[in-house]
Amino acid sequence: MNSPPPNDNRPIIRAALIDISGTLHIGNDAIPGAIDACRRLLTLQKTQQPNFKVLFLTNTSQISTTTLLSTLRSIGFDEDAIPSSEYIMTSVGATKRYLLEKKLRPYCLLEDDLLSTDFQNLGVDAISPKLLHSDYNNENYTADESGGPNCVLVGLAPNKFNYDRLNIAHRLLNQLKSKDDKCRQESLQTLSPPPPRLIAIHRAMHYRDSDHILSLGPGGFISLLEQSSGVSAHVIGKPSINFYQEALSYLGIHDPAHAIMVGDDVIGDIGGALHAGLGGAILVKTGKYIHGDESGRKTDGVVPTLTVNSIAEAVDFIICSQHS
Ligand SMILES: [Mg+2]
Image (cartoon, rainbow, N blue to C red):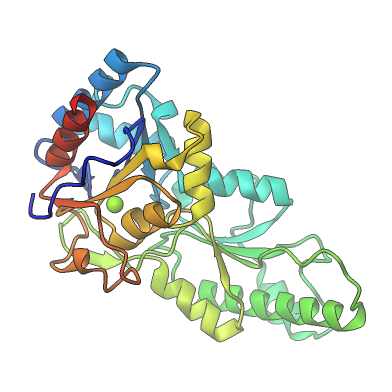
């Protein structure tokens, strides 16, 4: 550990939120010590219950929760490490709940694994060439009113980030924005604002790929759509404060100061958690960590509570804090 330990006045840790990608594993490789660290956390939960809880909190937006748990099982995270999918909260699940609550029909830039599972029958994957090439050129036509998509949803979708699909998203956003602007001008007394038109499961700029090299995340593609359409994205996953609040509510933790986050993303895991009021956020030097991330230059001066080499050291700290 190369940061000073937190002072003794910090609240007792009642909940540990643990990031998955880059913190527990990279592709098909478990981070050394991560499986044992998860087992130790779960043992702590069993011995301290109901006063200590564990939740794995992930922004993974390329695969379903079922596929994610299956991958984790295949690389050694057994039921003593991650008992079931009930211990995993995903930004994908939060997005699904949000879409249903807001009655949104997204045009999806998502991988097929998600479209055939979590988002089955919930979004639109393909827009017909007719609509794309003729109706979209008719300024009186709106896909929304025709029962078509009324927003664009973006996750990490390497197989869908091509010109044709991004251009469909761009055209749809422009069309919806024009409609919203027109409504705003015509009815100044409108009380309810239009729903978000561009929804991001998360907007990380990069992630540590299975070959252990940094790859492009969805963030750059979301920025592209924002700039081309003038529509700002509504982000569901980390670092959204709402996502952290949903996680704490799920665990029954009323005071965020009693929770701690552990992750490799200084913006999503550290900045997000501390802005949400969590009592601490531990940055691990695995996954997408880049030397200097702990300086605060990416997080408006917000710095990790602690920076450690890996999840194993973070769990050492959490366990020690229970006995101090
Ligand atoms: Mg991560």
